[in-house]
Every structure is written in structure tokens, then in C-alpha cells.
Length: 210
Ligand SMILES: Cc1cc2nc3c(=O)[nH]c(=O)nc-3n(C[C@H](O)[C@H](O)[C@H](O)COP(=O)(O)O)c2cc1C
Image 1 (tube, rainbow, N blue to C red):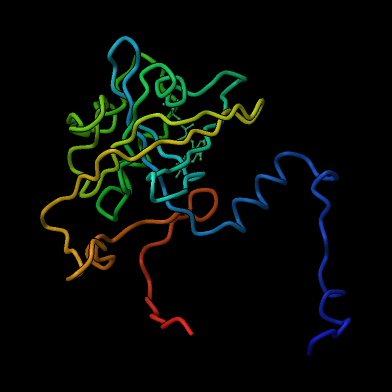
Image 2 (tube, rainbow, N blue to C red; image 1 turned 180 degrees about the vertical axis):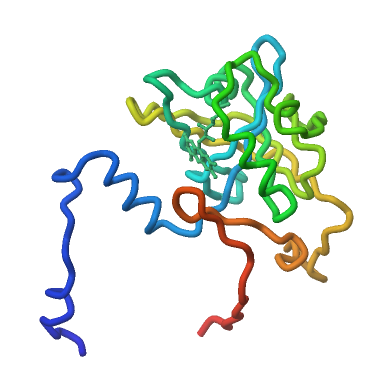
């Protein structure tokens, strides 16, 4: 009922300034769900290919076509992916589908910057067409991105915006007739919940807009 005081009073409100960073992370990652996974491939200044998953990843705009990534720090130092994007000005976002779930997980290992994570995870590397970055050859869909903007988040690392210059699609994917929509049932995307939990495509409901 509108205005029913019992509604709002049932809630427990956690003041985020009163809890520690771990709790804030746990609340955020269990409530903003499911999240798409940006599986980001880059190359280091010395030419080593790198690939790692980031679920603080989102679509931002379509014209220009922008995506965002929030990349944290490790021991107070920027992760390899962030450093590579800033050094090289390019990256690819490989869409994680059911077939890539386990390989994606292997690439979350913390390896030294000079170790090739493609080789470590048993992945084939290929070169993007529109930007100077590698991509995961077996991925059915890849966004080839040019570095657009970096927002320094201090201890939380950095927010990167990338402009998608090329959309690479496996010809096996179905495009919905009369549009550029990629059929989701054929894509089989994976979403991240919290911790090590993932979700596969479940029931799809279609609701026409009022
Ligand atoms: C599914 C998944 C999502 C992740 N999302 C993020 C994220 O959004 N931001 C982040 O900093 N680390 C995230 N991580 C951890 C990084 O993938 C991990 O630190 C990785 O080693 C970074 O690699 P790099 O140093 O080669 O960049 C995630 C890990 C997994 C398995």
C-alpha cells in the first residue's frame, strides 16, 4: 500500500561509511548481479599477450560505442591489464560464453607481467583487425577497443573507457532478422554472481513495452 510505514521500516539500512571495505565489496558484488564478464586481452610494452576477466564491466554508450572497465590494484600496484591498456592504447573484450567459462577462470591467476596468460590457460591468440591488441581466437564475439579515457580511482585502481572500433562475430552466431541484434540463445553468455559463482542463460521472458 502506498505510504505504508511498515514497508520502509522493515529494512535494515547499512551505512557504507560504518563498514569496512571487505563488507562493501561483498554487498556490492552480491547485489549488482548478474554482471557480464569483460574478458580483457592486451599486450604489454614488451609484446607479451595478457588476458584477464573483469566483471566491473559495462556498456556505457552506443554512439560513440563505449564500454567501461574498473580494474583494481594488487598490493597497491596497477594490475597488468590496466598498465597495458594505458601503455598501448588498445584492448579487446572477449565475450565469455559457456564454452569459455573454465578457460576464463584460469586466466584470473596472478601471473608475473612477463608470463603469457594465453599459453598458461591453453588459449590460442589472434590479432584484432581495427586496433593493436590480441584477442581469444576461440571466442565467438569480441569487441575491439581503442583506449578512450582513464579515471584514477586511487586505491581502487582505475576506470577505463574504451571505444569499440570493431565488433568481431563468428559467422555461426545468428543475427535476428532485420536487425543487428545477436541472438542470445545462440551466444550462451555467462554472468558472474559473487565469489566463484556464475550463472548461465535461464528462462527468457519477453515483455512488450507499455
Ligand atoms: C569472473 C571474475 C571477475 C573479475 N572481475 C574483476 C574486476 O572487475 N576488477 C578487478 O580488478 N579484478 C577482477 N577480477 C580479478 C582479476 O581477473 C585478477 O586480478 C587478474 O589476475 C588480473 O590480471 P592482470 O594482472 O593480468 O590484469 C575478476 C576475476 C574473476 C574470476
